[in-house]
Length: 334
Picture 1 (cartoon, helix red, strand yellow):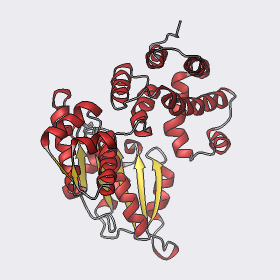
Picture 2: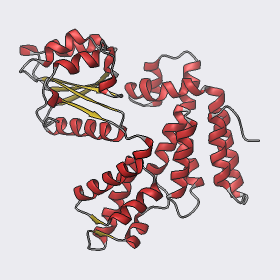
Picture 3: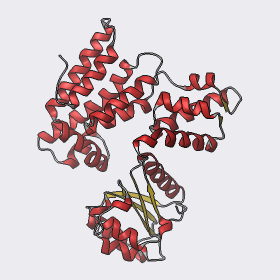
């Protein structure tokens, strides 16, 4: 992949491996910002905005821009392909495609653009097959440890992946914590005791996959994320899990309520104080998928579980897990 401080006119980041795609996007945005390049984000269906940026060069346009385009199949390939052959990169376009580039439809924007631009400027990050996930995750941990200049034995790597799971975002987070603990102990060697010390009692990184799969109403992935979250914590994480998950449900519920009231997305974004792109592409789809009533019921169930914890319920985690899974499958706690 190119150096992001001086990107080519058109670049493609694609793939089914979310972690590497997002890391590359962040690297692009960070490098562009450090180089004094303005960063714009948009969706591919906003063709007029992209057209204005691509044509706003020359005497009336002095800024250098990195345009990150999400859902790029909404773009006009005939507009992007000529731009990709230019030598001028004042307006650099980064197409972010959430899928395997090799499987994109031949007539899709992504397939047409990728076929025309230099292969050095495309990256296609693919997730492993389920049966390859453990080995893939272990190799990632080893590579990430080397990047952090940490020394960690292979058996410990295997143990870490077995305990935490194969989610690369969670593993990267755990390694950053291990790095901090090691530095605090004046060593860069990860030992068993140091690794156990670094695995926190609760972390939002552990809860984030739960929120993502809950929002998508994907019961299989939600169940695995809940298992991984519980396995990584020595003490019961229910209360803090309720706080983190509940905060997101409350946001979705607020959005669902405003949508049902017929308020425009722009007004809702201002009301909720969130970026319009984040609202349209992250919050609104979840709010519409769940609906106001279902979200209110789930929030009520979590409040009941929290009251139960304070009154001495024996196994609140089972109640928490059950409430989320039943909500996804269309039921409620009894």
